[in-house]
Image (cartoon, rainbow, N blue to C red):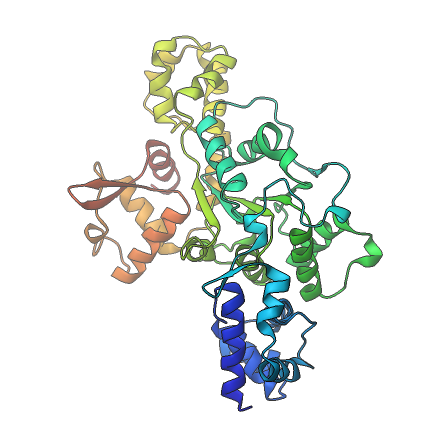
Length: 460
């Protein structure tokens, strides 16, 4: 067969099985291999990415083709398998045997249709729930997040979401919520429940090795990262797993717009993409106070991917003030509003009130608000230390505005181009450092009182 005919045939078979066409990178890999070329270096140069990134994509491509054609596919035998499959027209029976019912040429993923508690392979399902929370913090107090828990539980158990990103400013309670979700709601519906923090920025290779040690003996763990990814995906198909990766923002770079990975960490982007797109019966939760760039794209196009932005505790935050034995309960709602219902911000402020104002909230509120505890300033310094110069200029400008402003009103106010300003505002939103409000069908931007005070204190 001619090259284009082979490529077209492969794309048709993949689409008939998965409902998705080969993407540009997969087509480029297949084209180079079918012509007997060493694909990794050329494609990496053409696409300005690492060779490792290309090899991981190729490994997943061979896995997809192996599933489609019912036999092991590699760069060595892919052309022979494609030509033989076309000649014998055997793909239909392979799909029916390996994937079940096919409706209108769109494969129905068995993992998606299976009951959340039904194992894919009963013979290999653990005899009991395996929980490995690693270095997860112990949760001593959990304040009411009933609505949030219900939403997340529904996404995982009813909608079979594969990838959930739990987002929000530092201190808002993402770690507490995800651990409470495990303990209070859904752990019994999984074979494996795993928590890992990425606070020390481990490489993807190190993270995969750590996870694989839970499923297999160290001697069984492969050396190359492509095989490790394939092995992890196999375990996610074989067992129903819930994996929480905390502190994902530590994989992202400073001094550049939000969501871009640090040099050497780009492979995480492909790994998360595979978790979202490859058929399996598990769920990965990512906790971050900065949105990874690929998440917005993955959340579209009917992918089983969801984003949840965690907001104020609201009235439930009164439990924090009560636990600190503060007085003047009638003023607590005002205090909660000023500090945005952020549990950590309120705990730090409540301790300050107890130590310097005898626990009297009314006396504290007579001061010029908001007062920023040293610990709170330290917390805010972390995301601010990542900002680009246009982002910082936008924050300083907004801190000096009494009312919300539109993006166009910032033009010519700071020494950056309209494109730089637009991108900066968008990036700040992905860092959860500014708020958007709608007025008369116009989107306006403003800083909350804590952010505004921090900017004035640090950059005036």
